[in-house]
Image 1 (cartoon, rainbow, N blue to C red):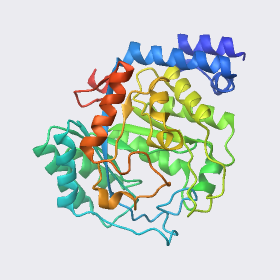
Image 2 (cartoon, rainbow, N blue to C red):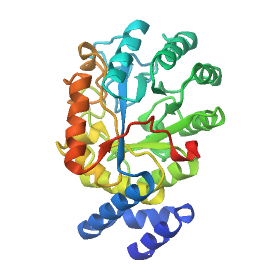
Image 3 (cartoon, helix red, strand yellow):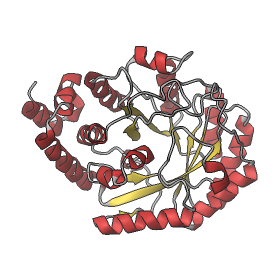
Image 4 (cartoon, rainbow, N blue to C red):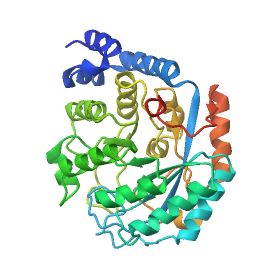
Length: 348
C-alpha cells in the first residue's frame, strides 16, 4: 500500500490497520516523516492533552538471573558491581520522589527473586498507604501468584516490554526464554486488572522495518495502556557491545506511528532517547510522547544499574530532575501532570 493510502487508513481506523500499512509509514522519507511527527503531536494533543505525566523510577536491584545479549544487568556480566536496596531505602526514595511532586513511583529491578512476593507486597502497601501516588512494577517475569499478591497490595500498573515481536530474534536476544512466555505474562497481568505497559527497542541487530511494524501492531492487539519505545543502546560489557546502536529518526518515526495507531496510549519520551541525543526527550515530546520517567534512585546506586552506559539524568537529585523537566515543559508550552496519569481507558 502507498504511504498516502496507509496514512488515511490509519487515521480513519487504526484498529483495521495491517502490518503492511504500518510498514508503509515507517518507510517514509524525510519530508513525509516531518508530516508524521506533526500529525502525531496533533493526535496526542487531541486525545491526551498537554499534560506530561512524570513517573519516578527507583532501580532497587541490579541483580538479574537472565542473560540477555543486550543488557548490562545480564547475569554473565562480571564487571558490574551489584547492589540491592533495603525495603526501608526503597520506601524512603519513594517518599523523596513524592515530596517533589511525582505522582507515580516505578519500582524496577533485574529479574531478582531475592525479594519474595511478601517483601515486595509490603513495600507496595507501605508506599500506597503513606503516599499519594500510583505504583508501577517492572520486575520481569513473575508467577501468577506473585502478581496477584502485588495487585492486592495496591500495585496499579506493571511494565513488561516485549522488546521485539519477532519470536526468532527474541529467542536469540534472550537465551532460555520465549516471546510466547512473555506475552502470556502480559495476558495474565491484564486478567488481574493491572494497567499494563509493554514496548520495544528500535535498531536491534537483525531487526527489519517489518519487524518494527509488527511491534506496533502487537502493542495494539495486546491492548496495553503504555508503551516504552526507545533506541537500542549498545553496552560494551555485553555480547552486543560492538553493534551499531539505534537511530534517533527511526525511533521518533516508530513513536509517531504508534501514536497515530494508538491515540489513547501513554508514550514516554524515553531516557534512552535522551541518552543518544541531548534533545531526544524534547524531540519525542513533539512526536507524540506524553510521559517522562526520571530516575529517582539514590545517587550512590545509579551508576551500577547499567543496562546501557551514559544514562541521561544519572547525576541529578529528584528535585533537580523534576525542575529540569518543568523548565523543558514550560519552554514547550506543556505542563507537568498533577494527577496519577492513569490510562484514559482505565478511567472510563
